[in-house]
Amino acid sequence: MDYDYGFDKFHKDYDKIFRVEYIRNASPQANLWRPLADRFIESSPSILAGGIAQMWKGAVRFHLQDDEARNMFEENSFMVTSAFFDVFGV
Image 1 (tube, rainbow, N blue to C red):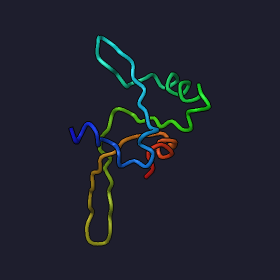
Image 2: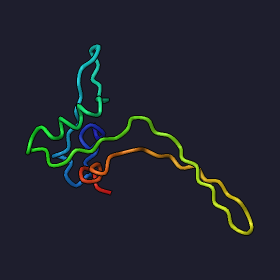
Image 3: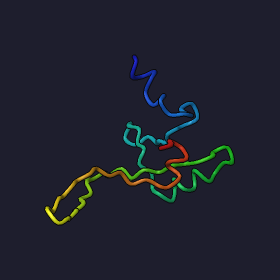
């Protein structure tokens, strides 16, 4: 119950954030074709911002080299539109 009533409530405007879904094969889906998502965001003056996140996430590798060693770091990444931070903050 705590999860159901508390999920995402750490966002400043959690009560104004919605996710767009459609039903496919009796299952809700949130992956929209990008032009459709853009049109939906633009469809109403009541929508103040719309952030789009890419469903695939992956690791990005960074190579750092100094005089003593060469180091490789791998960080998870998640691609989003710049307006994503207007919705969710930093």
